[in-house]
Length: 256
Image (cartoon, rainbow, N blue to C red; front, side, top):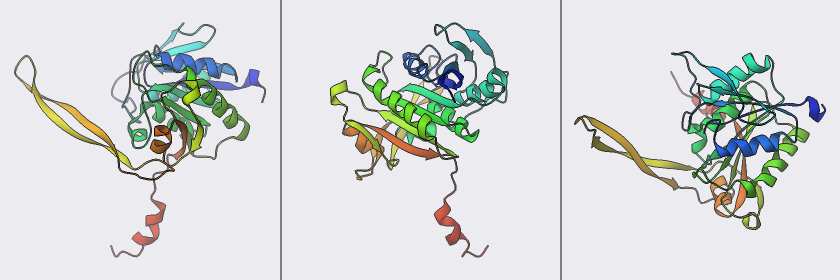
């Protein structure tokens, strides 16, 4: 397929006006015809939520020069579903999600709207990649990671992805000379240890605010968190099939 005919959907969870998606659009334009369908407001932490209890709005906007773009009132997964059904009326050749402001390494992949958009693409059989930079600031410097993103996109186009899989790519913070390269990793065994602060609103009513720390309990040198701490871009091959295949034989020995 020629570059001119290759169709690329770009989306995110930080919203269509977030700086990260603008950088990803510029990368995508090198590889084909780009369409953007992204949330009209931040949707971080939405996971794979879909909208079923209210209407979803889809509005054409002029956010990126020369790129057909739409803002969506729904979730990142909604954006992909609507793009396939109502914008393309067919499946695009590639889906790129991000660049997220903040890490989606380790267990964060389960909470991430950025990654859920890519997962939705994989469910549809579309090669999909989620990109994240480990910097939550709106003025984060995405430029050092751009060559790696470009190289990864080119490699996926050249080699394809196994059916049912996608790539979770995280980029450490650092200047270009500090980033050492790319590591293919497994997802680290780490989690958020949370608690909830009880507070009062101005009317005296109780509410709760979640606080906590992210803790890495994995001492392996083959994980995404290890790679990121050591200034490597991490790639974790990811799948939406959550079957614990190793448990099937064991469960078959049980008496029910």
